Structures are given as C-alpha cells and as structure tokens.
Image (cartoon, rainbow, N blue to C red):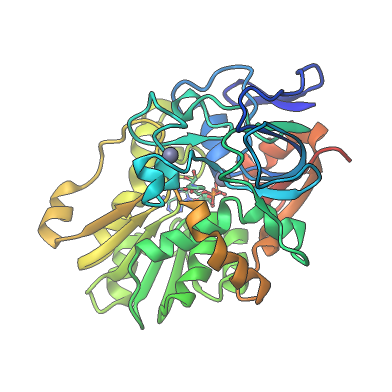
Length: 382
Ligand code: NAD
Ligand code: ZN
Ligand code: ZN
C-alpha cells in the first residue's frame, strides 16, 4: 500500500504497488511506522513543482523499522527503529563534507541545486517516498538515525524535517539577543521557526498568516504575537514598520514558499496570475519589512523560478538573504537534546492521525486548511 500521485489535486492509496527492493549495497528497506504530510508535499499536490510524475509516491518525513539491509550498511541492524532525514545524502561528496546534506551532489547528480529528497519529484532525484508501507532508503549508512530510547515516535517523525527546518530558519536569521523576528506563515514550519527563535535569544516574535485558527494556535504554541494580513488593519509591511518605530524587523523568516492556496491575492487573481503574483508575496513582504542591514531567512520552497523579488530593496537596504533546504543530519544531535529536555515540543503540532488508506482525505484537509489542521500524520501498517 502506498500513496500514489495522479496529477494536481489528485492522490490516492494504491494497493497494487509492488514493495520496494534493495537496489544498491548501501540501501535499506524500512517498514514505515509514521509518515507526515508536509507543506512541501502541498507544492507537489498543487502541481507547482516541475517534473512531478504521475505514479510517484510522496513522503519525506517518516520513521520506520529496518527490515532489510544492503551488504555495505554495517551501522544499522534489522529491527532498528529509525527516523530518516528528508535529505538523501551520500556523506562523502564535497557538499556533504561541509555538512550541507541538503545539497548532496551524489544523490541527485543531474541537478545543480538541491540534493536528493524522498518523494519530491524528479527534480529532487525521482526517489519514491515514505507515505507507504515500505520504502527504500538509499545511502542508509548516512541518514537513518536510531530513535533514542524514551523518545516519542511522533516527536521522532517530526525530527526528520519540521524541527530541523524551523530551527535552521531561525539559525540562518542570525538572531541577536533582543531582536524582533517576524515569521511569515503559521504552518508547522513557521510555528517551529517562531518557537526556535526564542532559543536564539529573540526579544519579540511576531507570526503572520491569514488563517485565524493557525494564528490562535501560534499564540499558545510559540508564545508569540500574531497578525492576520487579511483581517487586521494594515498591510503587513506597514504594520511591521509601525510596530518597530519605522526601523523594520531585525530578522524576517519566509516559511511560506510558492503557496497556491493561501495568498491574499488568490481571490483577486486568476489561477495563472495567482501562481505568479501570490506566490512571491510573503518573500516580498519579508524583504520590504526587514530593517536596513537586516537578514531575510528563507526556508519556504519555490518549485520553479520566481522572479518577483524586489531586488532594488535588497541592494539599497543592504539586506542579507540566507536560504537552503535544512541540513537535517547536521542538526539532529542538538535537536534530539532539545526535544528530550522538553525545550521543543514537535508532536504538539500534530492535529490529525490518519490511516494510510485515507491519504486522499488527509491531503485535501491539509491543503484546504480545514478542521483546524496544522499537521497531518499518516499511520501505515495499522
Ligand atoms: P503550510 O502549508 O502548512 O503553511 C504555510 C502557511 O503560510 C499557511 O498557513 C498559509 O496560510 C500561510 N501563508 C500563505 N501565504 C502567506 C503570506 N503571503 N504571508 C504569510 N503567510 C502566508 O506549510 P508548512 O508545512 O508550514 O511549510 C511551509 C514552507 O516551508 C513550504 O514552502 C515548505 O515547502 C517549506 N519547507 C521547507 C523546508 C526546507 O528544508 N527548506 C522543509 C520543509 C518545508
Ligand atoms: Zn517536509
Ligand atoms: Zn553527498
């Protein structure tokens, strides 16, 4: 049983897909125990990522039990319960050696930017993902990490992407003690970024979205201020300027990416224009509301090339832009500590637990932001 992509806004549970097999001595086969749906999967689901082929299985946020190992994987054992970073990384190329595991050269040699990612189109290597009963894990000697004893499985699943991505968003922001940090997007990634901003010493954290239930959730979960860019009075750039004595935010984080369903412009533009104009909005706001010399940290994913960046403001304000796919393996040791010590609460983001058979409903609810959904988790093999 595996999730199967049929085209934009259409996915289904496929009972006939053959189970994966070891193809390389560094592979493992993992029986999946938890598998989340990510905002990144929504970009695929919305048809915004090039070369997303019908028949693919998505899923890059999973835990599971090792059931088979290739001959060259000596650090894992059959029966180990592992969490698997979303980056597929070889461990030895020049980028992996710099701990840029999200930019591995070997796992996606045809691409010049991103490394391999589970279930993330052929632009990310064409690997099938973990929204399935079984998944093939390449370079299994590098990525999979045995779940520490006593760790909650739901927390472990959210250490494969959401926690490291939120943390890296805050880290790339270069937050100094007392800084005002503005996070665009109150999805799982923005919520985790807001929460992590405190760990880096932020003095004030403001999250911006247009979905009320998510903003309410954010106030509790991340103890931050919340601003609704549709309902509240001002345009978010004006609001941020006013609330910072017209200096602007010290750090802005884009946790939105090429959003197809959430933008304010959606209602006033046609579908085609929406995908262009709406998608750049959060990033434009971030650039326009950060202070002179400030930092814009981008973890939102942009499938195709978007070219509506207000580059003049970047130059004239002397803004630093930092961006990347999160490097999960680099961050895991410290994040495991934070989670075990209770300083981060990843599983608190999970609002929906759904059997893999109901994957189509789960995508629909998450995409439409219905039923107060923050983060849906699929449970295979029930
Ligand atoms: P999500 O869909 O749950 O959340 C996105 C939120 O952004 C929604 O609540 C939406 O209402 C809000 N939004 C839409 N337009 C906005 C705007 N103009 N201003 C402010 N908010 C706006 O998704 P998520 O799971 O939180 O993921 C967020 C982004 O992070 C996605 O682009 C995803 O692809 C990306 N991501 C990146 C990495 C990485 O390693 N860089 C990893 C995981 C996810
Ligand atoms: Zn993800
Ligand atoms: Zn590599």
